[in-house]
Length: 182
Image (cartoon, rainbow, N blue to C red; front, side, top):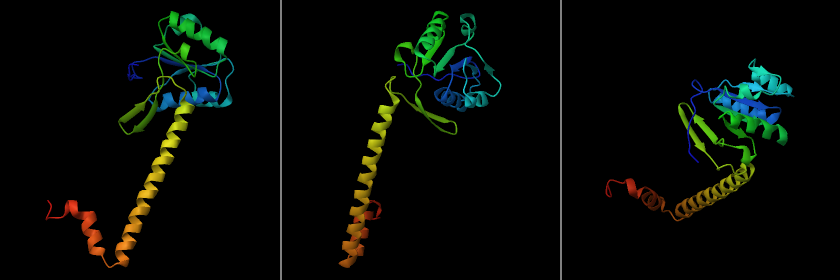
């Protein structure tokens, strides 16, 4: 995979779809600064509302697909998605069909935005739900480790306090920053 960022001011983008996945992808594109043209032959109410005027109530024709640089397809039946993806590819347009790897010229990464900083992580098109499960397992494990560490720290503090060795505890935990070792 070749990671790259598209400048939405320089790139014509389309979203073709129907339901909840299309709405999620549209919101993702809008958060990235894009104003994609939205096409749908059977739009959900939420998709109509989110599209905010840039909407065509039909699927695009092959000649219209050639006007775009990148197209995302979500919530279309497999046969229709295949038809649109093949037409877009024949017009030399990059295509991503949500959750159908054979029709994807590129993959959409997970994104974390903090002001001007944008971090992305990709799975190479692997199933996002399986990676979400792995991430939640890693998170639970790290939380358990953190609880064990904090429990050990509290127990050490209690032991030292009972034995009247608070200064020993302080010197052990702050030895790295004390003037004698600096």
